Amino acid sequence: SPGDDADDTPSADCPDAYLLGDDGLCWLRDTDPGRIDPLDPVVVPGCETLPEPPLFGAGCSAMLEDDVHFETEAQMATFCEDYDCISGGVMIGLDEVKGGEGFNTDITTLEPLACLRASRFLMIGRNANLPHAELPNYRYTGGGFTVSGNEGLESVSMPALEYVGGDLSIQIN
Image 1 (cartoon, helix red, strand yellow):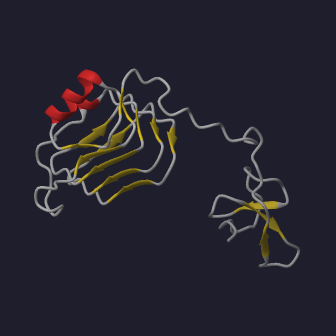
Image 2 (image 1 turned 135 degrees about the vertical axis):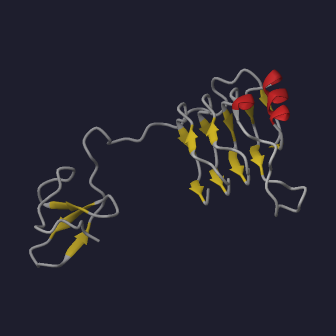
């Protein structure tokens, strides 16, 4: 659907004959009032080509070939003694002791996992005492990136993040 501009003026982000829709695409303004037809998205100058995703494992010094489930900060610190990347997925929290119904109360910081640079997917979930989800060196997930169900979570910070190959979901925190 078209943008909500009351005077139906073109947006500065779209060519003159177009309106910026709520979906972020440029829509052709038709001569028939009230009728707007979608066209192929208009590419904003400078964004003609998408950058190539980084090569998985680039910049890693040691890759663990497995999935990992961290339930304690001590497990994270032990991982970082030998590795900085994981070929499989990373789960942080998600208390499985109670059949997935409880909350992990042992993790209060991700600082011991600051070495982590890449993984197939990243899931941070059901941590009752984690106020800040910070991974300063994490730059790549080939799949999904989920932060969900963390009671008391106030912030998520991944300043080096360059690529998420799947769904990005931050919800119910």
